[in-house]
Image (cartoon, rainbow over all chains, first blue to last red; front, side, top):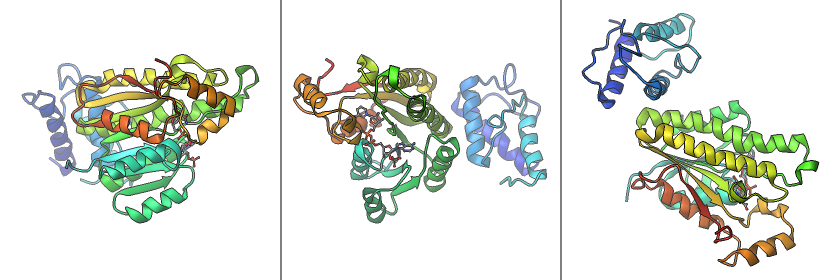
Length: 88
Length: 243
Ligand SMILES: NC(=O)c1ccc[n+]([C@@H]2O[C@H](COP(=O)([O-])OP(=O)(O)OC[C@H]3O[C@@H](n4cnc5c(N)ncnc54)[C@H](OP(=O)(O)O)[C@@H]3O)[C@@H](O)[C@H]2O)c1
């Protein structure tokens, strides 16, 4: 697992903990909504704000609607490739 | 003494906003403010409290400048505990004669700029699940006042925004309230003539116009950490004028 994957998983885990959903296991292929993490719209907004706090940008704020944890990770790794700075 | 909070007050360079900034500096908090231009009062605070007063020259009706202002506050102090949406403008004149430009100016600042700035700030509050938001509204949004149709409409809209947002973020430790202010002795009320002002004073049970401090005390009450059960409310502070 890369540092980027690790820090995104940790961030999602902390969101789940404070939403009383700590029993859910998060993996890269876990869907964000529905049967996966089951985030509602407010929790999705929180995730978006927490990602922005941590990394300066976030996929939801850019108008993308990632469906899985892996798609969130991909947003930052492709930003890295295009030269934008991504603190790990 | 509680830990200092980070407080954002828009339009704090003069008038009511300056009174609110002063009140939070007095209560030991960190205060960030913005307006289109600096004033001697702002310079004085910058010199007096370099570590807990931040001023950014910004026209918040311009989304980029508004975003840059919020980013500057978060860069300096990490998070925002209290937001007071105070910056506002009134253009008086009966609707049939009001220019489109004047009505756009009022809607762009009082409504659109307030919504945009609040969106930025509520995101940082959501990330930490706590916050206090106070929108400075006006009794003209509740009762209507001739010559202030568009202004009153923006204030009524802000009260609606207050209620909707209070419901949206209530479960996350964030409260949102409005203060419907009565007529204050600031530059804004210079649009009213002597006759209108005298009439307002005569009809006000408390027998005088409001001072910035009258409103600042109400703001302090609404943002008190203990007041987490007071949300979605429009608090009228007007010397009794509309009671
Ligand atoms: N005065 C009253 O009787 C009264 C009654 C009820 C409610 N209110 C409300 O109280 C609030 C403050 O009013 P006030 O009487 O203190 O008005 P004011 O004396 O005219 O002060 C307005 C403040 O907002 C700033 N501002 C104006 N346009 C701005 C912009 N585009 N971007 C950033 N800052 C801007 C001004 O600085 P710059 O000009 O340098 O930008 C100034 O600091 C308003 O929301 C008003 O609607 C006032």
